[in-house]
Each structure stands twice: as structure tokens, then as C-alpha cells.
Image 1 (cartoon, protein in one colour):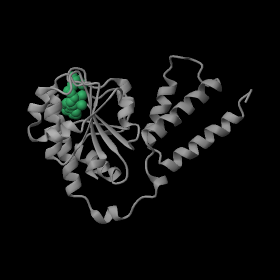
Image 2: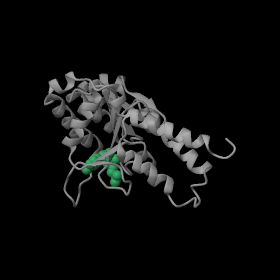
Image 3: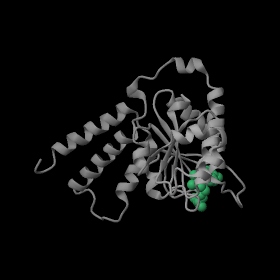
Image 4: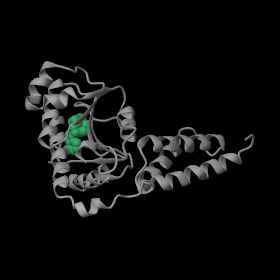
Length: 244
Ligand code: SAH
């Protein structure tokens, strides 16, 4: 279950933070580290800060986009100190997040995503997420060091894992009742976007209509079965477009 939970760091500037993240992860039983375009990796400073967790560093994978890092995940939780205007489901309490992630990770990969030291995650990157989480902190200064934010969320995940009710996990949800992977969800969004264009529904290019509807479907958190019903609905509409 813990091996299904990956930590994703986006464009980390200081390699020391990557090493400290590896250590934070290993202390909490996590081992899957993905790095999206790190500035410097591998790096001596990362190795030094990892202390006894160099195995986590050695197994870390580098990828070139966040989308690539999470496409097979059924839950993608973006950690951010500040609330953005994006209307994604938000966990105000990390323990609520951890419980849900542990449940999902019983069946499929899930990810916790952390942003750059200086600028956090971009809005486009947050759009790759299914949820957001914030660590409640001092309202006057609530921004943690990157690896310390990883430590706190990894601790919560480990705690939820220790306290899990195994009888609950004996019952495996049927696959169709599980959340779709990000890749399946992105295909749905692309299909919806195409149909909105082709049907003439989108008349004002800058009205953010597409974004708002996509946010609605993100919030609804459809299961695989429900998503495939929606895909079927879109295809049926598509067949009635002029020229099809
Ligand atoms: N100046 C940046 C802060 C980046 S800190 C910003 O305003 O977004 C680096 C990363 O650590 C963040 O992107 C986030 O993933 C994590 N982080 C730091 N403080 C956090 C908090 N209070 N809650 C959740 N994540 C936090």
C-alpha cells in the first residue's frame, strides 16, 4: 500500500531538499520518489542530506512533466500553502487527506505533489491534481521548507496506514467503482473540450467556460463507471453534430 504512494517534487532548486525529502520519506516507509525537471540531480548535497536514505535517491525517477509523473495515479494531491482560486476539492486537515490516500492506494497509485521552493506549483500544475491539501500553520508565516512539508504529510500518511482498519481493506472495491486514472480523466476532458468547440457551445474564447466545467467534473470525482457513462453520452451527442 505504501509502495503505491509516490512523492513528486516539481522543479526543485536545491538538491539538499531532494536529499532531505528522501530521508523524510524513508522514515515514514515511503520509497517512490519522482522528480520533475530538478535543477541539479544527482548531486553530492542531495546524497549528503539523504543520510541513510540514499537507496530512495538511487531509485528516484526523473521525468519531464508533472502530467507524465501522475498519469497512472487515481488520486493526485497538490500541497500548497496558499489557496488559489482553483475550485479543486481541498483538504484543510492533512489527516483527512492521508486517510483517503491510504484507501485509494490499496488498489492503485496515488501521488503527493510538492512545488518549487520559491514559487510553489503553477495553476497548470494544480490542474493536473485531483485535490489540494494545506498544512495548517501560523497565518502570519505558514510556508514550510519543502522537505519539512514532505515530512509532515508523509507522517500523516504513515499514521493513517498504521491506524487503517484492515477489515475494511479485505473488501476490494470493484474496479469500475474506483476513481479513474489521471490519464482517463484527461481523455474525458479533451473529449468534452472538443465537443464544446465543435458544437458551437463555446462562443466567447476568454470566458473560462471550459475551465469552469472541467472544475465541476473534477469536484464530482466520478468513478470509472460514471466516467465511461459520460464518455458514452459525449459520443452520442458527437454523432449528431452536423457533418458527422
Ligand atoms: N512561495 C511558495 C512556497 C513554496 S514552499 C508558494 O507560495 O507557493 C515549497 C513547497 O512546499 C510548496 O509548493 C508546497 O508544496 C509545500 N508547502 C510549504 N508550506 C506548505 C503548507 N503550509 N501546506 C502545504 N504545503 C506546503
